[in-house]
Length: 285
Image (cartoon, rainbow, N blue to C red; front, side):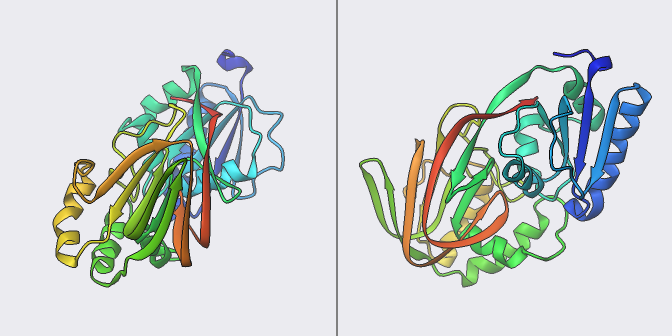
């Protein structure tokens, strides 16, 4: 690892992330680097086309900002650090837990970089997860709206969708395994958490060379209400209506366009093909 005096760090910030929280965080990071006389540049929104001249990349934003980054800089080789500046910050939590900014900066400047897996869904990269069905419908409703920090906005929308969402029919294929029928949600995770704190895939690891698949069968409204807190806490994997397994490739099909999200960004498709990309990027964490 290069000494601090030889680093040239780029700070990339999304001003829309976290309703403006990211900008304040980026300037805090910049102030610390300046105080330590570490060479750096900061970009708010207008990110450079090429990052080859920098030794480290600091990304300030949430899961959506990180998703944008990995799809824009697809061959990134430099060590990455993600600073919490979004709404849900689920992948940040996976890497850094509840560390305060000062502690994370110590990690950012001194820790060794370690490999992290990504996924590829219909040709586009994701790093935290893909949520099909119920989760996709929640994200569709939230798209374009100002969201409150944490899981508050997600929780309000989830509670509304519990009463109105209609489970769809899917054909899910993974190797020789085939699962068909009406499902509430199909979640393919690299990280453990989604929606600002819902532990959808509590056994997932972003460096194990596998994706965690969690499928929930169609449920009545009463059962949705009953088990939402259980899923939120990550205590659901043993329930009879939950299917859980690990894989490196899976496909999901439906006769109608499926609402789904990748790292909180909304999409639709009638067929989704997902595969793991092992050791795709390196983070200091």
